[in-house]
Image (tube, rainbow, N blue to C red):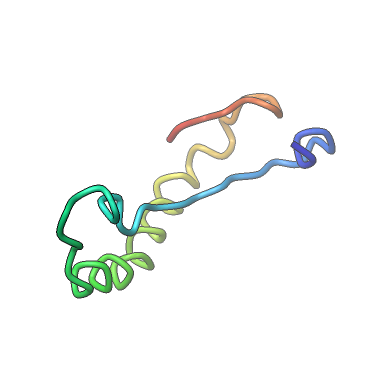
Length: 67
């Protein structure tokens, strides 16, 4: 909100690590969680690489874009 009011471009990136935690009766193995965390740098690099060409085509401040 504050970045929008100041007309500053902003992007938030996040990812799920364990969606089923507490939802299913048996917890997911820790190894699966650590494997996803280990993939995070590669996935983030891909998001940035795919997003950079689109930066010049962004909508006005305050618009939510899903890339």
